Length: 353
Image (cartoon, rainbow, N blue to C red; front, side, top):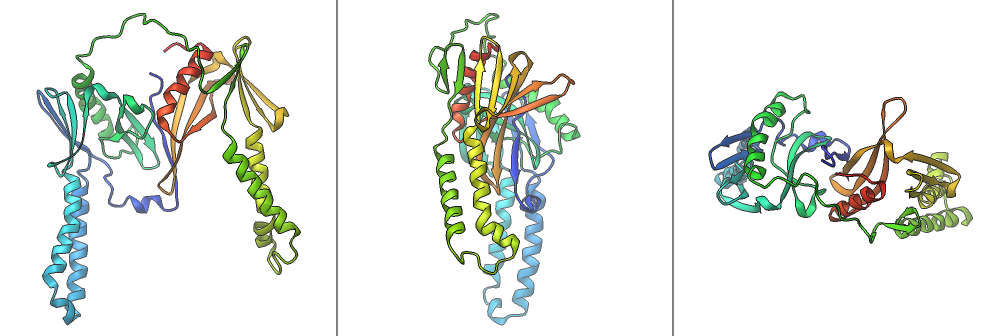
């Protein structure tokens, strides 16, 4: 496999508060001869009970102290039941794997079909690690490195007993149903070399990774313009504290320097010497990494305050001291392009998978 983990990194303040009512631990499932039902959100049952109780108590006390609210007492309780009902509906939402139809269907509240995926469209069911713990997700062939479709609740990690139970009992059954009857791949598949590269520019035995830096260059120019205006305009930051003056005047210059550093970064793959050359500051700093030290790719899906900020492709290498080292190679907003990028990188390094 090209990768085992699909890390998902979040940066946010108080993220745990947002997941108070999220499913946290256990996934329920029913395994039959031709049907497997997976319930990833059963912990929402407790959330629904809590919502029903808390909102019900709040509404009761509000109505008790207000004659005008007592006239709509029943409507208030109906609203509380509806809100709690959404939690209960999520709790019984199921993924139904049908061996006869060769499909997996997501049914909200166990009734409403949200999506149906043919087994032939599924590339893998893999673990996803992130701030909120470990989950398992379906990845489609059309977007092998995308977000995936979560089919489990959140576990603490691979050592979690409930996660171990998921791996030991449910995953083998799912793999057998989805992939078990597919013909085995040929022992020596024919390798078709890539002759036209989309993400690399070929110059003899050296391949330069193409990078779209227009947006970064625009940001650098804007920051420089901001700094120039602040620095040359009298009274732009009068009476400010040193910290506020730094933010108002010098902070844009710092940002411009950061963007300039990014603009000077480059990656070269030298097939003749079998090394990856990483350059920055116009070549003043340079690192060389042997192809032979390459272990695998590490693909990280990143978000800030629940807003997706891109999927980063990293290279993991061995080091002389026996430890691992990672290098961020490229960030994609469109995850459909990641597989082609990995195939081209494999072709240049001579990696067989």
